[in-house]
Each structure stands twice: as structure tokens, then as C-alpha cells.
Length: 108
Length: 114
Image (cartoon, rainbow over all chains, first blue to last red; front, side, top):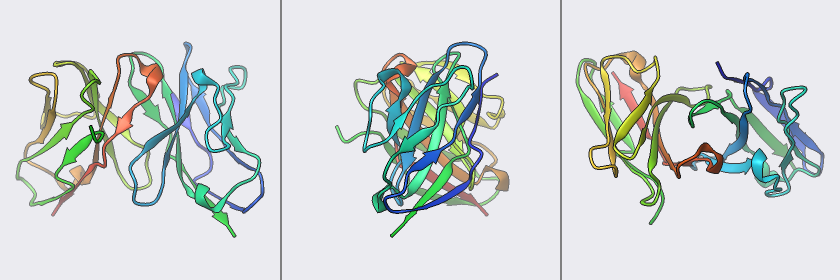
């Protein structure tokens, strides 16, 4: 079975502060991990994939297989980062399993 | 190509009625997925197609739910004898073969059963 846990439903930070959105997963094989973002009144969209090791909009995420985590980080949060963030795992087959999401609010 | 399209955007129906939703994926994507999302939850997998073949169905997909992708292009999701618990956002997504690319999602169809 595959499972994704995002322990924080809500996260609030001030502009310019570092932000970390936590994601833990459970999967017995080699997973592929993703972060998706949903801005207000927009569709769910892919933010980044662990396999590409990229930085998108200043966000990075490192897969830690020992801790089974894939936390999303940004050193200096911006107000436009306010959105719902979902961590997702692809294990057996190609279907994605999503976490419950974290609503990030960046205050001015 | 404007991405993944879903129709209708909103549907209000009376309990017991049948509803059908349509999804048009990105043309070069051969995989198509249906998810359901309720308030405060992440998207939950329902089913997916590779071309016209339905390869996996979730236990969430009761006998009242059926999905088709007859020519490997658009897909329909039908819910028969709707119940209030079916009220949710129904999301469609498509991808190239292989999960590494991630999905492209549509805007969803919001179903309200009254």
C-alpha cells in the first residue's frame, strides 16, 4: 500500500521568512514523489518532481529515503506563494496517491 | 491544445438521477485518470486508462460508477442513481506513458446531489 501524510493542514509565515512544508510517505518500493500546487480559483498543477531535482519558483524538495520524507522548502517566502500544496507519490502502476494538502498563507 | 478540458464545470442533480461527465485530455497524452476530491481532502484515485484500455479501478468506484474511453481520446464518467455522498469535485488528468512526467489536471466538475 502507498500512503502520503502531510501533518500540517495550515501553515502561516511572514513574507521573507523560510518555509518548509512537510511530507512523509509509506511505500515498500522505490517511489516517485511530486509536489502539486493549487492557487486560488486555479486548477491543480505540477510544481516539481523529485526525479528532475529542479528548483521551481524558488522551491526545492529532496527525497530522503531513510526518513521517507519529501519536504518542500523555500528560503524566502513571497505573498504569491499562498496556495494549497499537495504532496503525491507514484508507486505501483502510475497512479498518484495524494496527501491531504497544506494550505500555506504568506502574510505581508 | 489548451490543456485538459472537463465538461460541465458544475452539475446539480437530484438524488437518484444519473449524471455523465466528459474529459478531453491533451492530445498526445495516452493516459487518462479520474480522481474525486471532497472538501479538506486530497484527490482520491478512481480509475485510469491507457489509450482505450481501463487498466485500474479503485475500490472507491462502486457498481454505480462507470468510465469509458472508447477511442482512446476523450473519456466519460457516469454515475448512476446518485447519492448525496457522491457530491464532490471530479477531476480528470492526463499524462504521457510513465508516471515520471506527472499529470496535467483539468479544472474539474463540481457535482452537487440534492
